[in-house]
Amino acid sequence: MILSNTETIPGKTITRFFGVVSGSTVRAKHIGRDIMAGLKNIVGGELKGYTELLQEARAEAMARMVQEAESLGANAVVNVRFSTSSVTQGAAELFAYGTAVEVR
Amino acid sequence: MGDPIAIGAFLAFLLGTYVVGSWIEHRHYRTIRQREQRWRRLPVVTFRQVPAGWRVEDSGLVTGNVVISVDYFKRVLAGLRALVGGPVKSYELLLDRARREALLRLKQEAMQGGFHAVINVRLETSRLANARGGEGVAGVEVLAFGTGLKLSQPPA
Image (cartoon, rainbow over all chains, first blue to last red; front, top):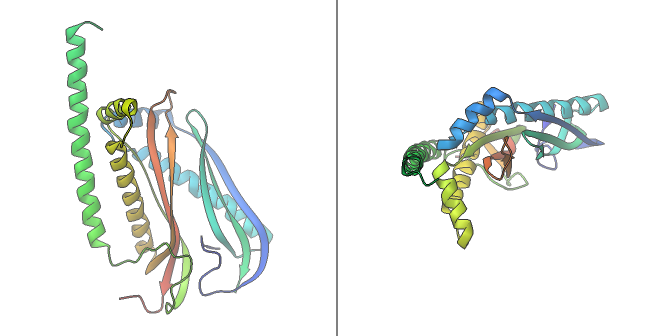
């Protein structure tokens, strides 16, 4: 599965469109990580626990998007975009979407 | 809160977060500059199309992200600044660090994936809500993403 945030896959031609595919996941923060991040928040700097948490969550959202594309028979997803929204206190939704296509 | 010891302790705490926070910021900027210098040969551009003359062999999505926050002292300072308005330098620096760091991580991922360039780079910023409620910012996340290209003739 080729992913791209451009409208086409560079060096390839799109032969079929399958429409929009998406994947999302809502993640809550781990209490241990939250306490660590809370301490780190006092002095500032990178909150590694959160960086990793969002990375993992985004990877999962992308995996779900890819799964949907595969089930449609696509071999690429173009124009991939991401969005993050704070749904509730301490939880965030990570959303990935794009257009499933067949490229050659 | 009229207790002079309590006020003194709080001021010492503020000063402590200022010293440690500034040191962390300084150290972060140093590594950012080093890595930017070391990896400047990898083109990372916001063009949506492949520049003319580049022969693309393979491509793929590359990303880089970071969650970062300011120290308590700067947050208090920003709170005071909000009373009179004007530029909030501490948050400007925070976002600058976050964006540069996210771009560096994108570059790192691109290099690890064997890509020679990254096009259509986009930066997205989101605020992480404080877990315990209230108005405090837990941190900002910056996500950088783009399309990595493997070229048959890498640009010099």
